[in-house]
Image (tube, rainbow, N blue to C red; front, side, top):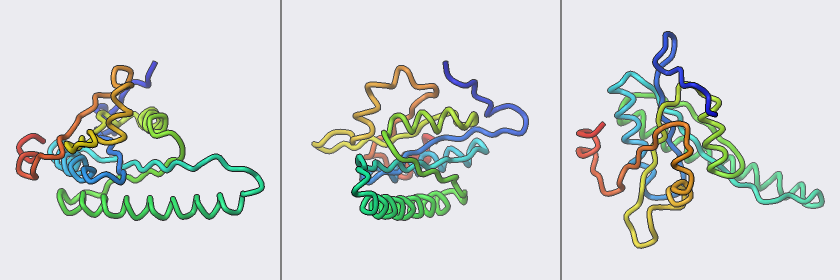
Amino acid sequence: MSTQRQSYRPDHRPKCLVIVDDTAEWDRAVYYASRWAVRVGGGVVMLRVIEILDQNQQWLGVADVMRAEAIEIAEQALDRASGRANGVAGITPERVIREGDTIAQVRKVIESDVDITTLVLAAGDGPEGPGPIVTAMVRHLGSFPVPVVMVASGLTDDDIDALS
């Protein structure tokens, strides 16, 4: 059973969660979420999930270096996405970095923040499919605790402005 959402109660505000990854279409999700947040007086939470490979104790030093590099890359990606959100809508999103399985971490972030009302994903339209997160997410959509909005990568800023 999921945690009851609190976003429209006094002293709360609705937020949407956006996953910032390495796909070309992440910008569409950030744009939509940012425009939505401004229109409803809400906020945006940006999540970057890093997957750290299994660590053996004998390679602990290497694992620490790999984790530090992954966190630095995650921070840079969130910097770009936050800058985009600020430029589009004048907002400063919350930033979250998690380690592990993407689907599990998305669920944990949603469960830990009772103001998240929507998960926003962008779907690619290329021959390689909609993207790794969307592909993985499809199997779990029916059990997610919040609605999931899929933003087509082919939508322009004007298209998204009309929808959000």
